[in-house]
Image (tube, rainbow, N blue to C red; front, side):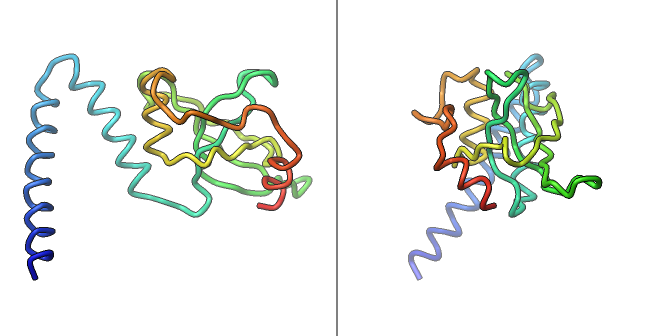
Length: 148
């Protein structure tokens, strides 16, 4: 009983506090544009969690470089039957502008990060984020990707 009342109170107070912060951010001239764009992107990404949507690294813009992206869909090449992934690559510091890359599934490296961790990493220009990532492709990583 006490737990339920506390949980409900926290949700109501939390929603009101979030609404106050949201309204304040939207009134600040320069901050409003960036905050609004980030908020829309995060809302869209969090509102539609799909089984295929995950944070990955893909070779972009070259084979020697990797970038963080979000798998939005996995589908098959009409000619070869090969599995490919639609990967949205958000840009720093505004993740609402970005690229959509179609990448062979075998080149996609799962990070194990949450969308929140990825967005924090991207928005901060890489200064805030997990301490490790799968940059070097090992046989173990390759096997895990090929089993998906």
